[in-house]
Amino acid sequence: MKNLKLMMVTTLFTILFSVGAFAQNSPKIIAVINKADWCSVCKANEERAMNAFKENNKDGVYQFVINDISNAETAKKSAIEINKLGLAKVMEPYKATGIVCLFDAKTKKPINQLLMSLSSEDIAKAMAYFKMDK
Image 1: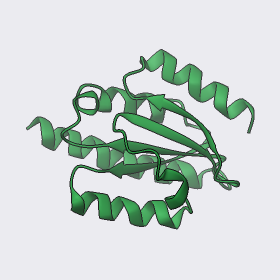
Image 2 (image 1 turned 90 degrees about the vertical axis):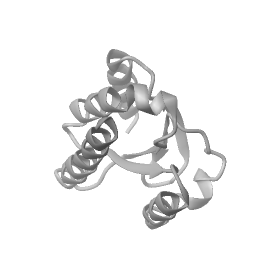
Image 3 (image 1 turned 180 degrees about the vertical axis):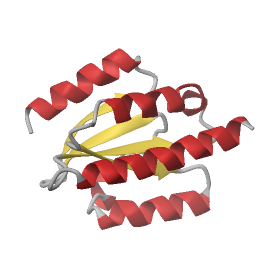
Image 4 (image 1 turned 135 degrees about the vertical axis):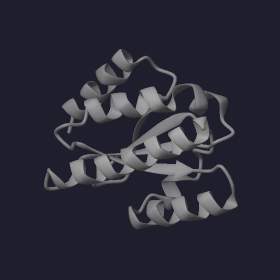
């Protein structure tokens, strides 16, 4: 039941952020969320972190992409989306789960990383800070 709820939140999150990204001409920051269903950090924080990301992206500055590395099938699907964004090469060093990798949407250069385990308040502060430069 908990896995079903988590899958629903992840799906809703993806839809909401896709719609949010269209509200603005183009996102300025691409945030790749590395997650897996076996990751204890993800299990403990995903729903809360996703809500914090959504709440702090009403202006659509961030484009969120889920990189689900739970298994070979989900990793393959995620790789397709990451390739479409031109991030395949720059994502190679980022294998850990429970992190959010931030990239400049134009240059594809890494900006920083956030931990899903950060408090909602710290996620809000970090998101505001990183979009100030954009």
